[in-house]
Amino acid sequence: MISRGEIGLVIASIGVTYDILPSEVYTALILMIFVTSIVPPFLLKRSYSKSEKVIELEDRI
Image 1 (cartoon, rainbow, N blue to C red):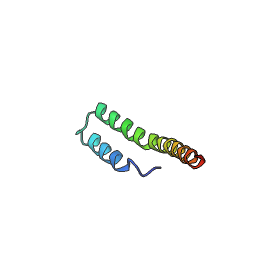
Image 2 (tube, helix red, strand yellow):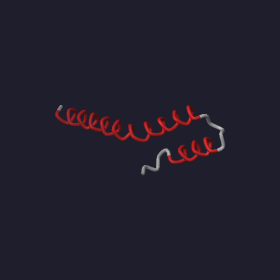
Image 3 (cartoon, helix red, strand yellow):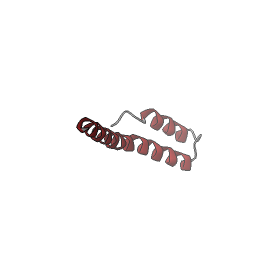
Image 4 (cartoon, rainbow, N blue to C red):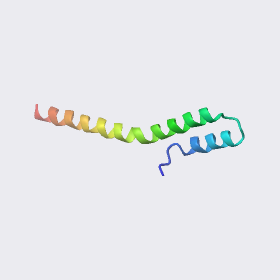
């Protein structure tokens, strides 16, 4: 498991256990944690591949 979002999952679980968070908020938090854990690696890979192409083009000039 990715260590990102771990604390958020723990806090959200505690909030639901003690009835501090409604189930709708818990669901939104879980989705946010999931998205912010899964999406960034793909975005970083894409941005690095574009920057490498720019460097290659600059080297050709």
